[in-house]
Length: 492
Ligand SMILES: Nc1ncnc2c1ncn2[C@@H]1O[C@H](COP(=O)(O)OP(=O)(O)OP(=O)(O)O)[C@@H](O)[C@H]1O
Ligand SMILES: [Mg+2]
Image (tube, rainbow, N blue to C red):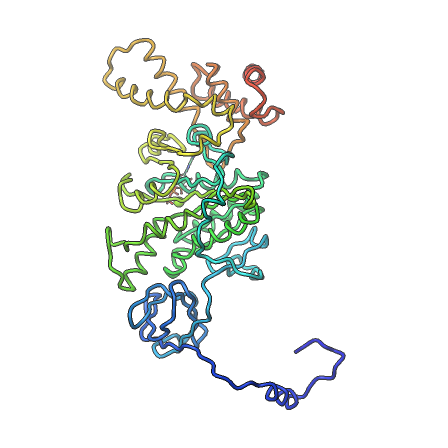
């Protein structure tokens, strides 16, 4: 009912007369399709010859699907909204648009499904406009170098496998090795850093979804984070779309000039959902029964993460995709694909996890191909030889197993390596500020922690951290001042 209180309400008859008077006769062409079969989250449709890939299909009963497979005389679509009464014979039309999601600051602190519907029990986010789920990645002329660090708060990553804003860094490892814990810490560590986060959960149990959301909320991270969820019981189409939805949200924020961090937890499940849909729609299976374009799918997603140049607003989208391996096999199809698409990987190892080396990051198999250029000079200087020394130590340590007599210098290096391994241990949900990294780096390099172990070491590290966090020193405060302060904190 129009809210024009001034005019008297028109009678139905008068309105109909007016409508008839202004009616124009003409030819309207619209395609009609008909559902021929349906099942397992996919639907086959006869007709609709002009349908394109990724186009939305609307059904007469209110259901919605997206075109996923085009055959000569029919098309296969993935069901997105399954209203009652979707069956063979139902009419299908093309509303003429692809999938999109409304993105604005209203999504901060919200939990949504891949189509933008609220999952947190609050009113649906009412956002005008749509950002396409599948978009072209920015051209090279709009991109800039990765030259600003993105701190995860993790001691190993921030010093030895550093990540820069706009980088794509893979978290890879067997199940239960702490991949999600690392990603979550990276999100928690963005508090107060003006980086918006998107946490995408794909195919996870409801209990883990609830736990992650509760952690984000309790730690205040929902104040800058949007969570996109397609849980284990969601239709495969939703799991397939989830990372694209998360990417679209971060992409819009990036294009508005902001820094963003997006976590895809995890892309193994995503690949499986894609395989399921592809097999249901009778696409030819390839290696490990995955369709041939699975590489293209993940490359298309991850290429959208980048650092934009100043002319394009200077925003960035850092991506932390997670992939699960079986029995540590990184040469399997999906892991190798993702390793080659990303700018480096952080490898989590079950044996380290079992030995209580937590986080279980295997430094010898973790690399960052571009983050070093973004690392702050002071940290880079302190951590410079750390990784190489540590890798040499790991090799030397093997010799000690044979009980061989070692040279004093070798023994010293082994002692140092063992000490570093203890220093690098870190609880989950406890990200550290860069200044705290600086404190232990300086103390370790100056030999102030030598000979310490157990409680004494833990106590010294706690004092260093507290000192660094309560002082006004920053990473760039100069080596001299740091060395002096670190000594004071350890003695005081
Ligand atoms: N740094 C840490 N210190 C102590 N415990 C940790 C640490 N990191 C992870 N954990 C514990 O290890 C377990 C597995 O962690 P998490 O769920 O993050 O692993 P995941 O690799 O994501 O597993 P999944 O494959 O099931 O998703 C959890 O119980 C977590 O609490
Ligand atoms: Mg996990």
